[in-house]
View 1: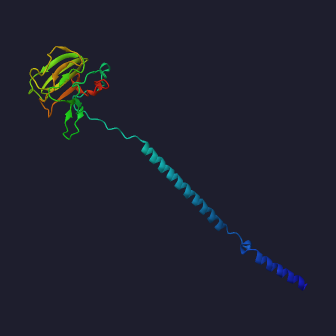
View 2 (view 1 turned 90 degrees about the vertical axis):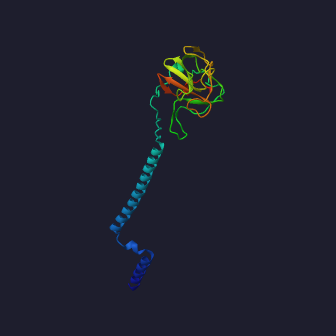
View 3 (view 1 turned 30 degrees about the horizontal axis):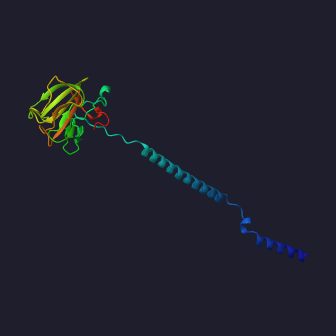
Amino acid sequence: MKRLFTIVIAAALAIGVSLPAAAFSKPDPQAASMQLASGAAADNEQGLDVAVAAKALGERDGYSAEPKPAPQPVYASGTYLGPVPDMFLGSFSSWPVPGGRLADGFGWRTDGSGEWHSGIDVLAPGGTPIVAVAAGTVIEVQDDPNASGYGAYVEIAHGQGVTTLYAHMPGGAPSQFVTPGQFVEAGQQIGIVGQTGYATTTHCHMEVSIGGAKTDPIPFFAPGTH
């Protein structure tokens, strides 16, 4: 009997040594709940971070993809804003001063003067021939170099309300080679380059008007003309 009691005590001691104390303790439900809640909170926080990052990325990409509004050009009063008539689009076959260099274009000047330029300026030495850019009828010849800022000039009508004007000629004979009512062909000489009127150097100021309103001459020229 004493031997049996000794065996039981030894077995109990062996079990106590081999098993951890936690095996005999009751599970703590509150601690388990806190552990689950902590894990869930971490998952939610991670998911929220991902969602916020994705939203920010989408907003950034969406913003960067939006095209910037194109600046709207401002035109001076008396400017023709309609399309170039079909029969005149690219129809001017002659440059007003053969060999002349395009300097200033149509629109507001970019030299800081704030001036509106109603045509194009073609630089060339004084006396260089000026020709009609297209066939038409001469409607005005101004040979007084002091009459206006244009100086001496020639104006030609080409039909459908389209006219061209060539300014800053020297004035007087043989400045102009045509008379009002005369029909001219494209490329026919109508005058020579000068520096009369409002001009700082020798050049031909050329304008195109539709119904009396100035418009950009460049779209009227055939490709390669200038």
